[in-house]
Length: 191
Image (cartoon, rainbow, N blue to C red; front, side):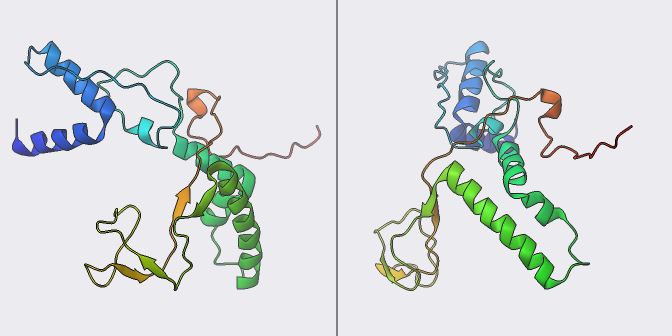
């Protein structure tokens, strides 16, 4: 086995509990003295996207959704806010005023949809331009530092965002339709 593959496998197992359980089972089956970890149960509070990174070593559970949460979110934003229509429509033939009117509606409806699904709130209580006290070792997921590498405070440039919930709609369609984000709309003509 190559060193590169060993490192890739190490970091993949380190960041994915399901993959770690699958590798542990393979090691146990091969007679390795390493004992496999017990497979964790997947809770509904697991972060969005966690299910998509499972290894093929672990058989899918019968109650798993047949559709990625990312596709469900895109489909919801299209249905409720027409986001894909705005983003994917060529706008070269439209004036700034026309694009602005369309964008205003899509942005308003996208904000309502995202608020309902995720209850998105500012991460920092301080407003932009206010002083922000830094912890001794701030989490890079919570604070992106620019300027001096070591400081006890700084000025808020962006408040950040945090999702207080994650309540995506459930997909109940067929596997063949799982990648469809919006249906074709057809106005039937009388025969």
